[in-house]
Length: 306
Image (cartoon, rainbow, N blue to C red):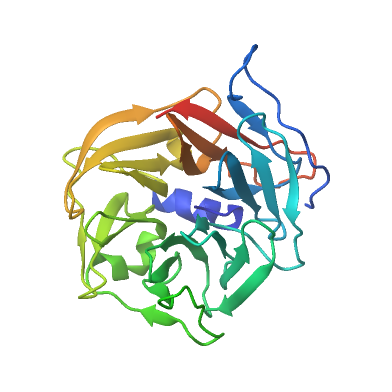
């Protein structure tokens, strides 16, 4: 995930307010789920999470607002109002129906069914970007620091207090500050995979040892790596400025990822993050090439075959 204020620096290293709640527009005639889901004008979306049934959530960089919609018909509306000075970057749903939101300096968690805020933390971060729930913890990347932040979850889902988080300084390539740690996913064996956008690689992190190592991509590309998504043994890597999603077969331990395909669409406009439903992948168009976003700018979510 990437916000516009870091666009120029990140691109060099690699070579407004909410005004409307729009109903979605189908990109194809006839029945079925829409291929294009419109978002509110000026929303500046970043993260997406797909929840119960066909419900989806998208966060706004403008003020931290959360939009909730339905994949079946694309209709939706404002779910959680924004707050001045806030952001909603990466989104993650845990197995207890809670929506985790990266806020730049920290994180907030909401009841996904009602929008009630349950807790909030200030990590002292510079750009807390993405999150991954792993059962007994939620892990966060900070793109301007070579660290991960861990929020432990109690045995019965208990949330810690404001100071109940841990900043983890890894060894190895994950600690490289200039690599721009971005999207995060888990492996079948409990390791974490982090996309490093500027370094154009994936890194495996072992929570048990704190060590990290570069994932062998077997000739595949992780250039401009943004959001990550694993479905079984398949890992999807959003490559934002390439308007593409790389598809890999990931080994169980996460050390090797073999390229098996690439997803593209003429409707992609710098996708940031993705979610999955059925046989489809849903990509949020971040449109990070707009240097001066306006309240009239349009945004959407694009559906492609997985």
